[in-house]
Length: 286
Image (cartoon, rainbow, N blue to C red; front, side, top):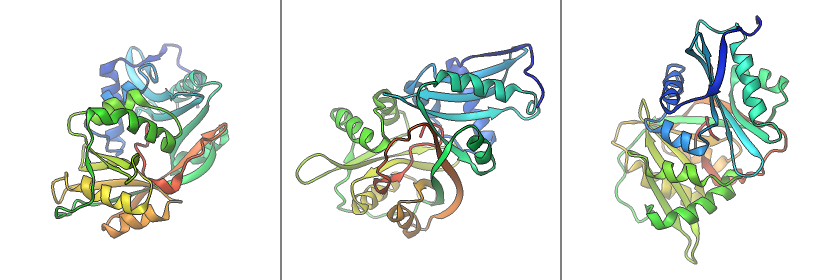
């Protein structure tokens, strides 16, 4: 790696520049959602940094600060042809400085996990991407229903118990983004049994998050969401490997493992109920 180029500028992305980063993610094969940029920006408008070389976008990183003392790192991309010039390292340092004092999570691809470990990130668990196709599902009696405006507050509270931190601004946009379809289930005595979202991506659809109190509730929510997807469309679900019921759910719907990441954390990791996380929201924001 050479020294940092002297004409490198690093600053928060503007709205249109985040769209550029999403396009880069698509070129890397990450298959982002069609409405990801607006929802991601809502999580932390200043949490997306871009490096500019000679005034042109050269690299990206997201360093989203969540409620409390945690952050999440993603979108770490240096444009092909510009790698090995110190641009990525300079951007990495700027991102880590923004989250200094917080624990930091990331979902690392296999070939970068050793590098993250050298920077102090510790493996927590693996997330396994499962892919299949949306199969026709007859109307059932699952009890899942669409999410309404009055459901935002209980969903934010339920989500925080499963995600580890409150992310109300993100969820308000995630649940209302055009093309996103959300469903929830309630417990007999009140309270939420689970909720999930399915969204259109560059190719097919992804389900995430899918948080549920029981495997049966997760199964019913999964079917309710798939019912909203045109049959035959590619379908993705990212399941934490320790959630054996989640792995079994994906397999029972004909989905196959195609990819994996490592959830790694630098600092004190949040305590997550992995047995109730059946689908990760996104690899970019956790």
